[in-house]
Image (tube, rainbow, N blue to C red):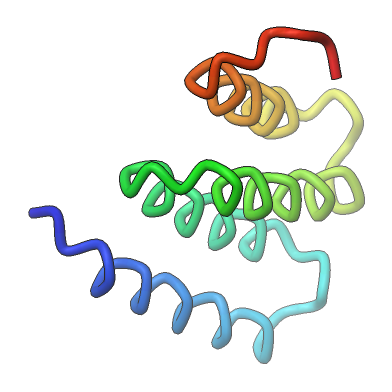
Length: 91
């Protein structure tokens, strides 16, 4: 529907609840950061997308096994943003 501010507000409220209810590196927090990143992506705010995706990746690196598929998803999401920004050089 394109109502990004409402979507962002809801995802941020969800994140705040999860921060209170869950341990600091619970995978559900990473999901919240991914959801926030999706809204920023749709808004074209790529620096905010990358910030949220980086936080999600940091949590997943702590919470999950090194070969967990969600880590691959995180790296892929970050790469997609750089691709859309036209930044193709290695990290």
